[in-house]
Image 1: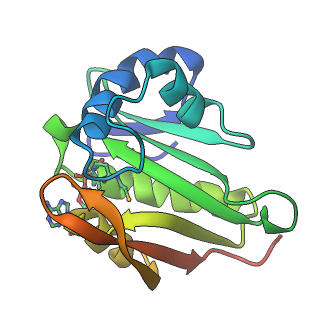
Image 2: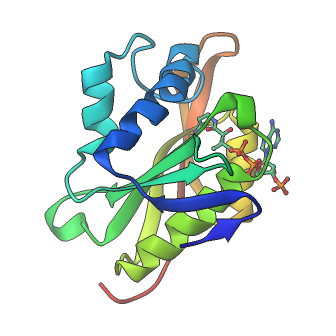
Amino acid sequence: MPKIGEIVIREAVDADWNGIWPFFRRIVADGETYCWPTDLPEDRARREWMELPGGVVLVALDGSGAIVGTAVIHPNREGGGDHVANASFMVDPSRAGAGIGRALGEAVLSRAAADGYRSMQFNAVVESNAGAVRLWRSLGFQILTTVPEAFRHPRDGYVGLHIMWRRLGESR
Ligand SMILES: CC(C)(COP(=O)(O)OP(=O)(O)OC[C@H]1O[C@@H](n2cnc3c(N)ncnc32)[C@H](O)[C@@H]1OP(=O)(O)O)[C@@H](O)C(=O)NCCC(=O)NCCS
């Protein structure tokens, strides 16, 4: 179980959703980083995070045991595409910039490699999400292409969506 400073990262249990939803809701309501409706209902949000086929959810906890971030790893495609992992990340905005996203990113990469995925793909990294783009690049991801004007940002208007990718291993 990786431990970074006061942050502990472990696999989520169902009851963790109650600690995830408050910041998940806030991030989706901002409409700046995910292609979901800003009023995404909780039951759908829970399904999209906690119940993805083949999904593994991680949570990051601070020293008091509060959930401060989460990530989910799942096959990017079914069948012949299931050796490519996808992953999504959310860190409580009130705890941003403290290294939690990087710790989750590293934990996700090692878990996905241990689970036998050959590579990891992010299908839709919003071009204007500079912090995330910089973090993923620093963790070895490259931008394969950018779909022009694919995301309607509430302040920046039409911006691109990056498809980002990196190799993990060769076991699948
Ligand atoms: C993206 C996100 C996961 C990053 O988590 P975080 O805990 O704030 O990130 P960290 O503190 O670990 O920062 C890691 C790196 O990100 C970069 N970064 C973070 N915030 C940044 C910002 N506002 N501007 C520029 N770079 C930034 C830095 O390169 C930092 O590098 P360092 O470790 O060398 O200092 C988090 O901000 C988040 O959940 N955002 C909303 C949802 C989202 O965008 N998810 C990802 C979708 S692709």
